[in-house]
Image (cartoon, rainbow, N blue to C red):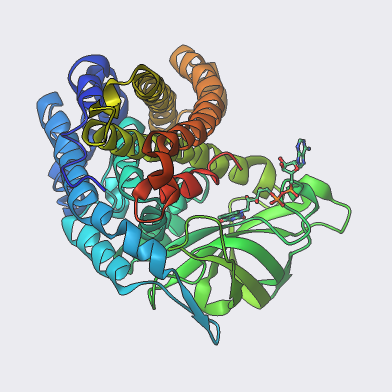
Length: 451
Ligand SMILES: Cc1cc2nc3c(=O)[nH]c(=O)nc-3n(C[C@H](O)[C@H](O)[C@H](O)COP(=O)(O)OP(=O)(O)OC[C@H]3O[C@@H](n4cnc5c(N)ncnc54)[C@H](O)[C@@H]3O)c2cc1C
């Protein structure tokens, strides 16, 4: 893989940073009068010490994080992608082992402070708007999809900020970040994937709390990373057997209380674990209200996941394009670089053009989420009732746009990611089919994005 700072070496991305993104609107929406800095002044809460106090500081802070992410993604993670994929995972006696280089580079990311992108500062997160999160994710995914997943699943727990209430957030989010948890979406079961309303895993309430019994399939990183802890955000039935979607609730289950019974052998993402897990009266903590698990909380979590996949598609496609462009400039046929042959040039131009469109979609979708989500959070924090929030003109306008752009960006970027990695192999000719080059892995890793 190309070794460079992936934030700086990408002209199209830099054009967004310097000319296209409405930073003033994003900073206004996210920092909201720099309320974190004001709370820091009053309380001295160390988690808020880095909070920006004005527009320039906010932008500097966001750029510093994107720069550090680009640096580690392009100079470290990308250089391990091929060997981690080739080594894969080892499963024995319920324990999953990832290649040591993944553990080391994830440690480096934690030391650089670039992992908890999705959490508010008050819980120990970086405190970033969605636009910045999306760009950081694109940079990570360009470097490698497996390692990005092995490193970053903790961010799935950001859904707790929206639905769990202050007590649970204070108890779990700082712990998840500090102890380097992997967090899994506990949805799919062997017989129920798309058909989530009919899942069978059950939760039972006793005088000692909730307990979950059942099994889940395809549980990304439910094993944790080589001894680091994990937790599952688990969808389970609290209503009767025919209660459908309304009978499902949402729980936090610690990974130490479940058994990992196997891992999948996959087409791609070979260096991050996809586990089969069993719950045998596993202690669980109810999130939010009973019966809202699927209809509200999981739908919210999946909207976040859609944004991540839009960034995943952009990142993988960018890697494929940059590798193909480099190869085409070096590979000589008929006495000239193949990049100068019209049929190849046309493919490279299409890739570049489509990736520019994908990045626009990703950023506009993230910006539209920023412009309604934080306003509604802050109004709630300041005591506004549901009706006031629902009828707020700004929230209505941007939420409507976010509801359109989020699924479109997931759809478009995942489909195009597949066709761009397909074309990248074509540019490499026979070499593209050989694992020695990176495009073969990128093609395999692309395929999950639109499933
Ligand atoms: C690598 C990997 C990681 C994953 N990680 C997680 C995870 O962390 N947590 C988790 O809970 N799950 C995870 N999944 C599971 C993933 O979410 C499911 O595979 C996905 O939801 C589809 O479910 P299924 O595989 O059971 O397919 P099925 O539901 O059996 O669907 C098969 C096909 O039928 C189509 N189909 C089904 N119903 C309809 C319908 N009503 N209308 C139109 N088409 C339909 C589907 O689109 C699909 O093409 C992961 C899967 C993989 C491969």
